[in-house]
Image (tube, rainbow, N blue to C red; front, top):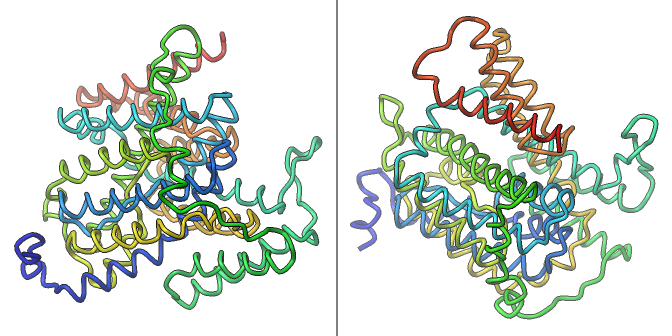
Length: 438
């Protein structure tokens, strides 16, 4: 049955190899069970509940990907989008987290509709590839900036905006310890380096009295605090300025999820040798459909947008070639659900280094940008720098797409096939004007 379902022989793999690959992928991305609740908890969401929702969303999404698309790609709530959810939507705009979850739900619905209608693929073709890399790197800087702030390594300063914090304080020192442990383990290619670093730093934090071990309810019981708490009617509010703001939130969740997934799919499928000679990815619609449904399910459980994880490449390196790898990852996440309430005992100083490390890994996407071409380099740079400095992924997207379209016009390279790019640029210009007048 497994052979028929996943076509193991056709991909030159076996059940044993796929299971091992699944464990490998799980270890490299299990940190999200701790980090995601830490970030969303700052939006006022119950940490234990978010931890349970994270496990459920990752488990459901990964199994769905394996069964529907038969790819060794695991899903979980996305880094960057969880930070956008907390720091921009909830804290910045002042929206309740229930409304923010409603926006995630609507973005998932929009994602599914666009996929079924074939429009999603059209949008992918309209966005310049260098901007995919720039957005990934900008989100990486955004995450790392938040990690440095949470660690106390950088602090606010009225004269210079930011400054170096007091590294002798317990939280900063603990974060630096965790950073060194994670970095050292990664240098030695240890699987699960980020997770191990978090746990070691957490133990040190407990010993120093920086956090208390106080587990809450059983995983499924904890889930009731966020499950089905999303407020879709509020997210559909379309009157006045707030309606425009909510539309932008849904737009950002949609587009960043799109960019994140396409970048991950290209990287992982290339590594697995699953890309066709013409560069196309087989069963792309199935992959995107699985991701859309996973995001909808995640919002119902109580977590931010679910995306494909680049850590899936570690499982591919271990031999994973089919959806069985993703199913194994999903089952492991579901098993972790029963330990989820313990996550609230992890001190923030132990998870901050993970944000910094993940951010540093995302910067590597800039290698795909042609820095010798000003028409590409300038929009890419504006995208990368605007995301962390304006604390908004939307602003980074706006600067990048608008600059790319403008420079294309200046060079006389506009083509009929670029119409959607220019439509997007015009919408972003209108957005800047609206924001200035508001």
